[in-house]
Image (cartoon, rainbow, N blue to C red; front, side, top):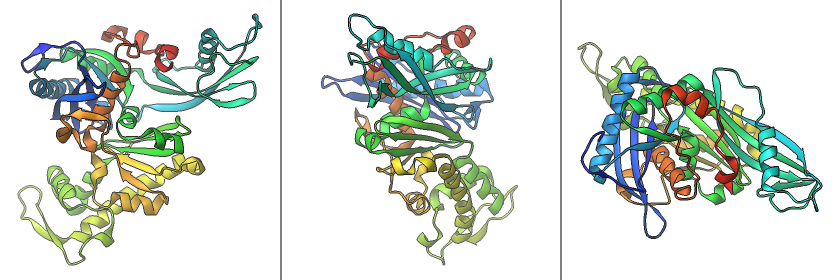
Length: 417
């Protein structure tokens, strides 16, 4: 066992969110009503990552052990394998196009093999030796001139096109996540992009259909996913997150980093107009110096420019999709809880904004009803969608084989049909 007591239980699904500020483990099962029931959760501070990338393997492994142990104790079972999330500024998303002709058999109808051929054609892209494909997600198909098709099998036509969103990552960064998990005595069942997992946890299908921007603000990075007409249009990573806001506070108010984080959580706000202009806060000094009293407005004047910078970058990245976004913006992740952030975002980006809390789960909802657990819940939901039907591939990844195994896209057809 890798932590607390209990026995291994068939059917348990474990999501492991390895983040810059925390490692979160979430254990779920599918109940009698075919819903995901959360039965265990554990969280541990993370000190081995920077901007989503592992920089201290041993520290990361220890954080994984602690988070898993806490979740095991609560669930009363042993964890043997996990679905791990991966993130960081090394992640890149791009859209690709494939086209094949439909052979003139007895009649021209799209078959499963035709779908596989066009997917393979679309993913046949030049890939540097230090990068690998993590996922290939269908956006839509075109049969002859008919666009917007989600399942083309059985349709009549002579020409099949596929629009695919391909996500790639740095092979070393992905291998380090796998190695850290293995060093904790666990196997990796699957690797999933963290903001895609968060999407499963906090977005409704109606939002994805109408068009929505997911903004997942973590400690080290801000991840963005754009959905429209039910499919992914864009994924991206900004190397700025809540950690940078904390650093700004520490420098601007001359206070230790850990105290700056407390000040941000307790008194931070994204909008100056939302606070009392006469309010003051006490700021601890550095190196034993005496604390000082400053206007709370001085804190907000430090926070506001950094939030504005993040939102300006987001607008530059996804502004071209504006006419496709009719459901607004959903913000999630630990840093999304900054007071006034939805209001400030609405004003800057001129869209409706809500905070994304995990949905579609039962069980320990009181413990996971927090944007901090969006990725962990999403990883469990992703596993649950494929439980029993082959959706999740049991990779049992070994570090020395990671490039070979991770470089292969999961069986697309069995994943989506």
